Image (cartoon, rainbow, N blue to C red; front, side, top):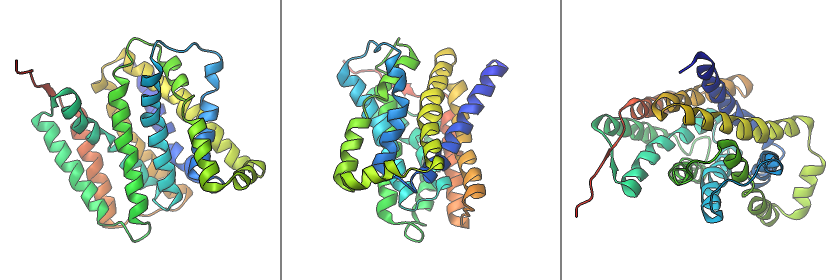
Length: 291
């Protein structure tokens, strides 16, 4: 990779790591549904300036509903209900584990031995983290948060079907789908008056965080990431995502003073190691069809 593109890959990882902190701050004033809706209202602005890519509406809705709506709503819910920022960033990156697992079913891509080791290591780390649930956040919040990497992984596989389209245009139009259902959810769960009051009394800090989440973390960062994946192999680009949980954990320890016990910290590190093994290994083998 060119030095400038390596710098861009690191920049995207830093942006995504800091986005967890920004989300936590915004959630002090907004409900998970409303905050996520506002994030995509901002991120959908480029739709006014770019044409819809050559992707069918059902596929566009399916990708956005999983890769964006499902992933980020589950993240926001977990953060709003006490799951630490650093731990959340690690859990979300476990999407690599689920992506490989779902690829077995969807595309008959059998993991290599090295990937199998990575899956086993990451699963062990997740089980260790599960052993710490119930002390500072509920099992329910953790279960909802686990929906984030799962829907993320499904979105990754659906994204394969949107080929030969401009990445910026695609991600801009993907952002157009979540706002309406999320706003409807906010009205149902929070009430119209509470939602309106949150918008009227928004602080400058929450506003800045929300705009940053929509404009920088979603529109710009995803576009840069998509461009890198277009110009280089996934094996060259995707490992940079391993920086995200380290940035998220470091930033949360500075901003919120978060600390992790030995079992949870060990589990987090083991998950990241397992993901590293999976991402740095060779591609999966495709099982031939039996005629």
